[in-house]
Amino acid sequence: MALRTIEQKITAASQFTGVAPVGTVTREYDMERYPTGTVGGLFDFANPNPIQLKQFFAKLGGQSSWSLSVVDVDGVATALLSGTTEAFIANTTLNLVILQGQKLKLVTTGATTAMTARATATTRV
Image (cartoon, rainbow, N blue to C red):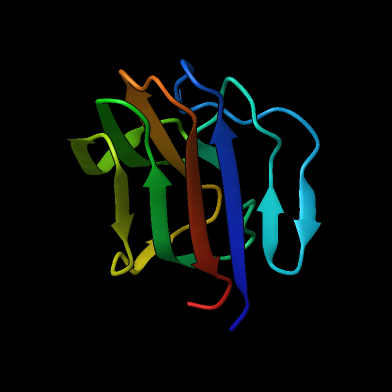
């Protein structure tokens, strides 16, 4: 079982908007880190086979409303989790299977400070 983690960071006064992050990703061990930016929130594992989401966490800033969904290959989003928090959200019991071509999408509103989000999946279901 191989783990793969994608990390994205957003600058203060910006939001996770559910779009692909920009910039050159750095890879170290099983972690892929995108540079801090003003857009992001789309987690694309580019999986040729189904994978299993093992953990998702986000450190949000300010009074943030957030939603996490899975997006199918046809662009249709299905809500997984949502809430309002100004601190930290975490879920280590999702065990969601992400099919070929599906992506995770994080959207926030109202954040005022820098934020970090990280999704970890296993390549073996």
